[in-house]
Structures are given as C-alpha cells and as structure tokens.
Length: 74
Image 1 (cartoon, rainbow, N blue to C red):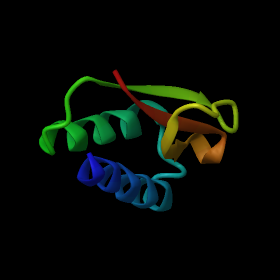
Image 2 (cartoon, rainbow, N blue to C red):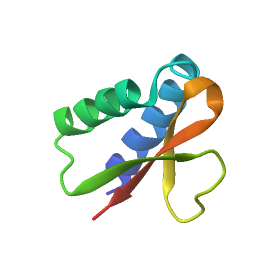
Image 3 (cartoon, one colour):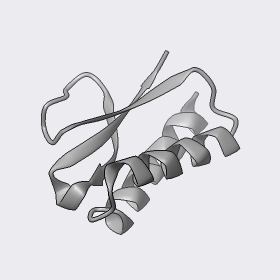
Image 4 (cartoon, rainbow, N blue to C red):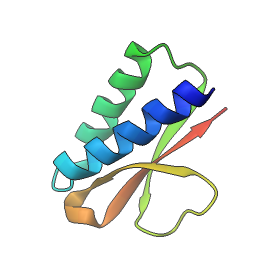
C-alpha cells in the first residue's frame, strides 16, 4: 500500500510539472496508462474544477491549471 501511495504521489508531482497546459482528457489517459502499467486495479480518475475536491488525492493539473485530475481507490 505504501508503494502504491508513493507511486501515485510521484506521479502527481511529475504530472503537474509537465502537464499543466495539457488537455485534461489526454493527461487523464496518460495517468490511467501509468497506473495500469504499475498493476494498480480498482480505482477511478475524475476531472474536476481546481480546489473543489477535499476527499480525494489530486494526481494532475490540466487546462492551464484550471482543472485537476483526482484519484480514488474503489
């Protein structure tokens, strides 16, 4: 579990640094592919307005920083 959270945290840092101007759907697909490659199962990724979510982990920023992609285990 700790490795999963570390991987997601590192992904969030890398994603926000490289992808702040990317379209949200493109970034979401990239994050999804990376999580699947690491063997992560049973999760959801959602595109939301920046700052609107407090109970999920932010793993990326897109559309010029106006939206965020959040991760939640199911």
